[in-house]
Length: 171
Image (cartoon, rainbow, N blue to C red; front, side):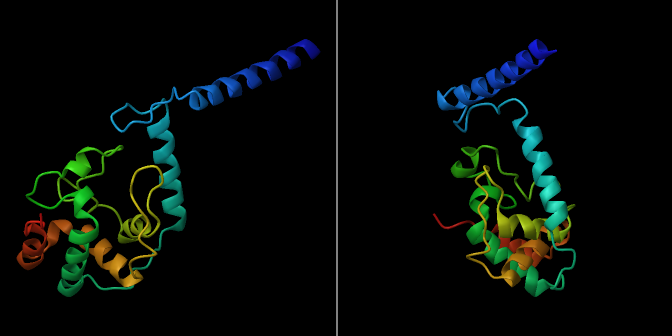
């Protein structure tokens, strides 16, 4: 039994040492063009989903109104469009070069099927190791809720709000 236990401990130590060597010798893929490491996507998505579901606000303090959508659209253009895109416009060079690829929020479902509290949490806290920054230090809670409401209702926006989003970005 002692030999088995000794062998088990040695095997665990070798696995840990191998994992450390993989990273410390620069063998792990770190370039944005490299494929994800084994289990990287699965583990990151699982951790994010659990953290968001546990911490996201349940109540939305603002109403889903034209004025909040317009304010959210103006903020989105400034802070989000470079990575997450605008309706009817091509993906930016920054967006194409990121890993993981940022979702293009106005193509397909985007985040319109996510509760506003989930989007608010992601805007406020950012998402580690994705390039998604936290905005809680630079935007007010009201501004983050305005963007969250805009995105949650992206499939139902008025022509006026859509026009704000479709305006070309300054070069």
